[in-house]
Amino acid sequence: MRDVPDLERFPALQATQDRRSFLRKALVGTAFVAVGGALAQILGDDLVLPARADGRPRLPPGQRAIEALKPMGGDEGDGRFETFRLKVHGLVAKPFEVDYAALLKLPQVEKQADIHCVTGWSLVGGTWKGVQIAALAALAEVKPEARFVILEAANGYTANVPLKDATAETSMVTYRLNGKPFSIDHGAPVRGLVPDLYFWKSAKWLTGVKFVKDDQPGYWETRGYHNHGDPWREERYG
Image 1: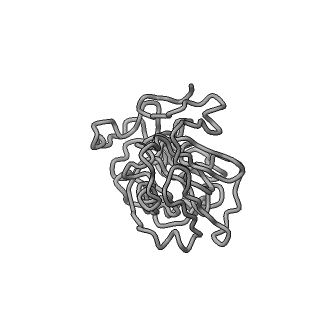
Image 2 (image 1 turned 180 degrees about the horizontal axis):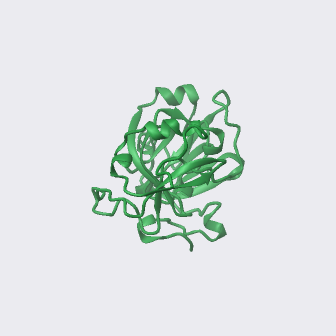
Image 3 (image 1 turned 90 degrees about the vertical axis):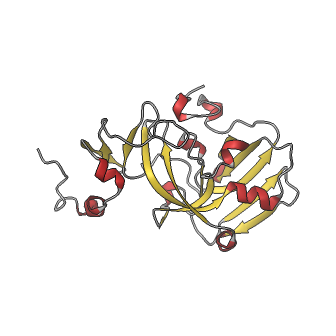
C-alpha cells in the first residue's frame, strides 16, 4: 500500500504534497478520505501537537485534523465582492456599514488559528486574514450593556456568540485563508471566524455584526445544537 496518494492520478494534490508545514513534519500516520469530490488528508490519531497557550490540548476531544476545509453546505449568499455589505449595529453609539473596499481599509490582521467542526474534523494551523471583531466594536463604540454578538449572514442565518468569545484576539471578519480568498461554498466573499467555538458559530456569507444585551440563539442553536459550543467541553448538542 502506498504511503502517499498517486499524484499522477490526482495532480490537484501536488500542492498539498509539497507543503512543508509543521503538520507535515509532525505527521506519523495518515489516511485519505473523500471531501467535496476531492481527497483530503486526515492526520493520524497519534499526531502530537503542542498544547495551546491556555493549557488546553491542541485538538479537542473527538476531533481529527485534516489539511483542507471541508464543504459543509448551507444556503449560499451572493458571493460577489461588488455587492458585499457588512452592517455593524445594535448596542453601539456609532453604527456603520462598509462595502468590501472599505473593509480592506480598516485595520487588518493575520492570525494563526485552528478551527473545529462539530462533526469531528479540525483544520490546524491556518493563517486567517481580516478585521478583528474587537476592532469593529471599538470603531462602533459598543455600549457597556452589550453581552453578546450576533453574526448575521445571508438568507437569515444567525449565530450567537458571547461578547468575550467574539472579541478574542483570533476572532474576526475574515476574507482569506492561507493567502487565498474563500470559495463560495466556504462563505465568499467574507465570513466570520470564532475559532474557540465550534465552526458553525463562524457564520459564512456574512452580512452583519450585531451587539446585543440579551442572548438570541441562532439557526443551529434553535435546532438542537449547544448554545455555547466549546469544543474542549464537547458542547456539541444542547
